[in-house]
Image 1 (cartoon, helix red, strand yellow):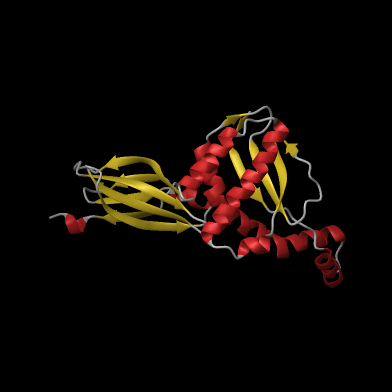
Image 2 (tube, one colour; image 1 turned 90 degrees about the vertical axis):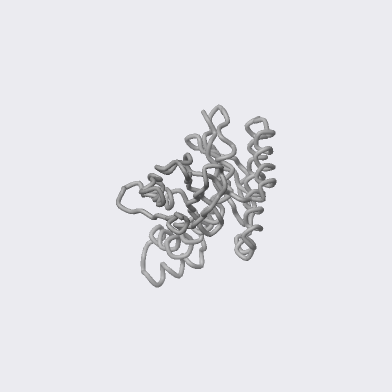
Length: 246
């Protein structure tokens, strides 16, 4: 089995006071009150936390590649205020490990501090897993070091550079995955590689399910205009070089 995915999650913690209040006000059963409490008071926290940490976990995945294991394809770090159960659990190849964490402290950190905290939480969990599963920890630490050396900047080029019809220019799509957004840029360069235009054309939620739909095809519409077309083929954003045609 190939280990290739890493994620942080905020497990739901029952707030008994909230649940009791829902039971009293909504006149519902306990299980229904639990569902309502999750929807009203926890779901958005869980979603926001994943979005803010996905920048680094996605960067780790991209740099890591794949690692052969006996029975694990994904590492899931469960970030909790208090660890009541230290057990590492493997369910259908997803290895879950609890790590102590304060959501309130995380929420007030700067973007860079959130990136650093995310990597620390991820590596704390991985370190536990390498001991538990008898994995070689070196490849995992090397990726963490790469992320630090890159200044926690998750920036990458989508697909290949394409030439304009007149062969004078090259264009590419650059994705910058940040804590609060995924920004998509179109870059145009002279044939010698000198960049002459860099324009942000899309800003989306920092999650693959949100931004992937925009990445369909990069296509030159003329010698001086290039467009990014979405996967459905029904939307596009373009940039032009009309101003330098002289």
